[in-house]
Image 1: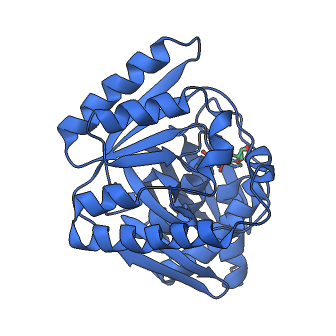
Image 2: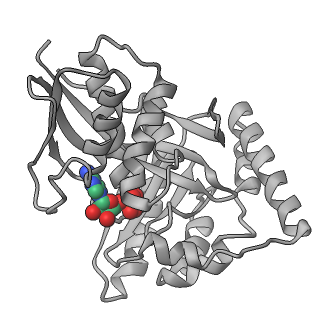
Length: 306
Ligand code: ADP
């Protein structure tokens, strides 16, 4: 095996009440990546798109993740990685995570699956650090494990994979920039015990609803009392999108990652497509460009396409 080709999916993190812990993988969009072993002890990045992302490995999340992996095995070889991004950086749907996760999953295949998925999440987190300044796993975990995941703890890393019923996602990505660092600054330093109780009750209920396939419980549990109220002002038409989507039959949803994307979950593809129309009509009244994706939750994560 001389090279491995993968499709690495977009992901939604900060799933409503599950800020910094709950995430899931989408079926589309995906980045395309090819990883090869090379003789030189370096990581070489070849960007095949127009996003002008760094080619220095330590500045590119894919490169940083692969460097971390090479250090762990004290390798006498290196990797070349070719990246064709379809997930726009800064979209809030895990653009950097797709690169970090795709790179390490593909490289691990070339190394005869030497590392567990949990270990791959650790390497991918070293990649994520380049994009956001800290190691976090709420996007790379669902990207690597597929489906819905809960990151119970970062240190030691503990990723819980969740059962879930068929779910469809509609995501609108308004083409405005929200810096993750700015969105972080808006977070409250403290939360009241009352809000904390409401929040963790919803996380428990959401996990149970997913497990049982109880769509009504999932819908009731999709409430966020802590982050959404302060961050939603960054996203034009947020309330209208949410209210009209709920009226249109969506189960619920909220800000994807740190925005600006907004996602809504639905029980059927038909409803998810109806929500696409609802979102489109609302954003067509603005001057902001946007993309909308309708996708099933992807239970596989990074996919091999050789
Ligand atoms: P998203 O909001 O879609 O999750 P992020 O904010 O996580 O996107 O990541 C985007 C940031 O990461 C940008 O500053 C970008 O320059 C940087 N970055 C470095 N390498 C990559 C890469 N391979 N793919 C995407 N972003 C990268």
